[in-house]
Image (cartoon, rainbow, N blue to C red; front, side):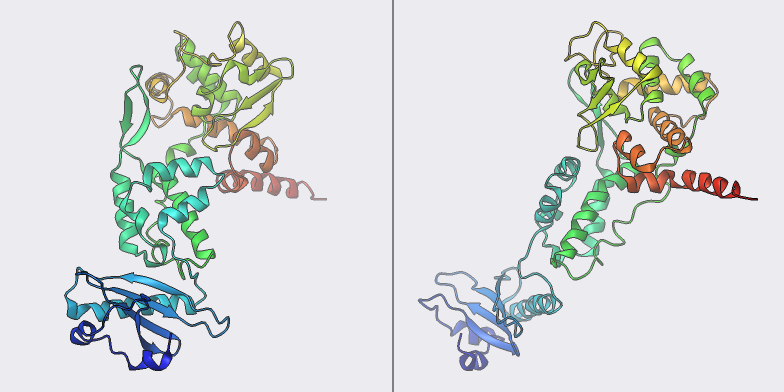
Length: 392
């Protein structure tokens, strides 16, 4: 590019651009906006609008990255220069601030984050990839665009399970589910920020802020007497399933997905291959838990559900909801009691019993950060009691 010629080019007026002839080399006509920053225009060979470009000269590295801006064909010809100049300057400022020379879309940012993360990949497939936000460049993402995505997410029904006919069962998406759906997108965009694909997080920092106290029901704790009362009022097959949640810190969906072949009675080992966390794990069991699993696995083929309904079919989420709610009412327990309450109560007992948070996280299939966030205060209480015991 000849800088002398670039300084002499005026792309601002329609008349001046109309006089430019397409070059055989397809080299654009460049106009210098400031030192090292150029706006280019490539006239169309046919009846097109022509294409606008930007070029940046990095004096520190000597690199001269360029970028195609488009034809701005939706604007009047007299408005295109200002629009192209504005977009070019945004890109120049992005590069000057240390931003990446490559431009990636929200979808590409999500795909990069989801590598090796099955749970995130699944959420992106359901909530991002088919949404308009997927095609937006991360560097151009606005708060309004992210807010509108969140509104669409909140209005999207949540898939609960499938009925015996294989038909999907939906329910309104709860605030807690929305919070969990936003987590991987926020993480993907923060990773893009770390890579220099955006210069700040203004577009999503507030727009993806989680709703507070969205999962209040999970804070309900049932002591062992209350759990026994709940079990006493459940039908036999639901009772066996709920008892499994009382003796194993698993998500209800993970317990329902267990096969008889996942349990090795000889070694006392249970393998959880299908879980929300996306990674398999194995836990050792003994005592009452071992006896329970042996009873559930007895006379079953490896592919059969370890915890099955009375008809031998596998459990689906919609199947245990009503029986547990009815049993909670009969046992005079809080109306908010759900299957997840048993998992929460089990994890609470493990932490209060002195099991370290790393081990609790491993057996329950979640991160140490999440265990610390929701249950760390219980361990701090134990620490305070231990310190009090040091008194002379």
